Amino acid sequence: MSEQLSVGAIHVIVHGFVQGVGFRYFVLQRAQSLGLKGWVRNLNDGTVEVHAEGAESRLQQLLMVLSQGPRGSRVTRVEHLQVTSTGSFIDFRIC
Image 1 (cartoon, rainbow, N blue to C red):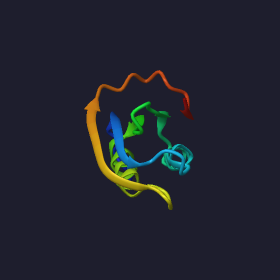
Image 2 (image 1 turned 90 degrees about the vertical axis):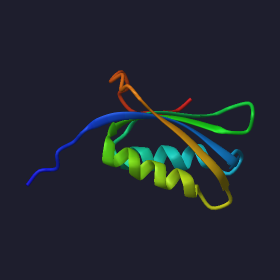
Image 3 (image 1 turned 135 degrees about the vertical axis):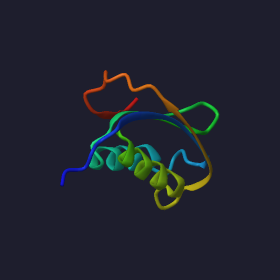
């Protein structure tokens, strides 16, 4: 039986001690391993912003790891919105 894939997109803001601890590289590795496309970047207010597109089940897995973060980080809140998938990304990258 093959898994039926529902494609979607999420836009995420991660709050806490998430800059200067390798958080973007952590997200990059996890997103790539899940086969997601999009980007991650630091924002001036100390948060990390993520846009990811792919299978809904994989997006949910990414949200779970974003709430944990890498060793040395401290995630206090993860805000996310379901958004329309653009289909315009060819990979996942750090901006």
